[in-house]
Image (cartoon, rainbow, N blue to C red; front, side, top):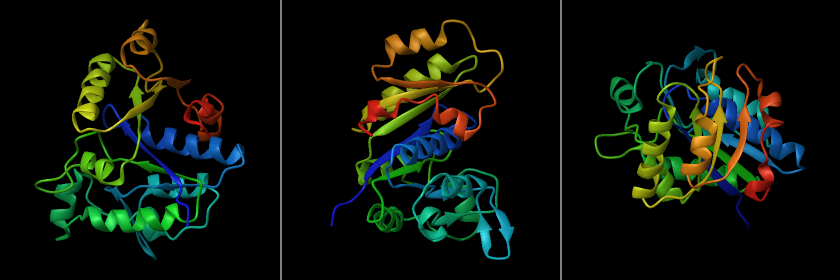
Length: 224
């Protein structure tokens, strides 16, 4: 049985645009005739519904893909508290296990050509006292796509994140510039294009929908 290619989407910080970019990648992949599904392994600030806690981010990824998937596979760890995942888990008296995340990932990977895995917060957000989302990426051996939220400080945040990704033995294969604010600082995209050392998939305009963002991405650079 062949498994899907997986991609991990991280961001320079919370609010950089990871969900938008993840949904846009899924949309672009489906438009290219591929079977694609999203995954949000850990989500906080989830809403209580009649069928349990649900993450708006995970729901957006479900809508953007074209593979039938169980919600529990897409978002195995959902927490109500709007805080860092290790704190949200502690509040719920739950332990986050990478082995559980891997098992759900494999369920998705068996049904798709591509699995887009969205992180939570930034690169080194803790999921326990000893592990971070970077450990999830390392165990799943996923190439990393970095979303840079274009605002003051983005160059520093992007370069620090790039260094942290490489320090964990992971691969930064591409990045996306997302206009997180209306007024993008001059020269930021050009500077990062020169210094990040990975191809730029595209520049997403401020306020874009996932469909509009998908048209800004060149997923051919990922081999899709």
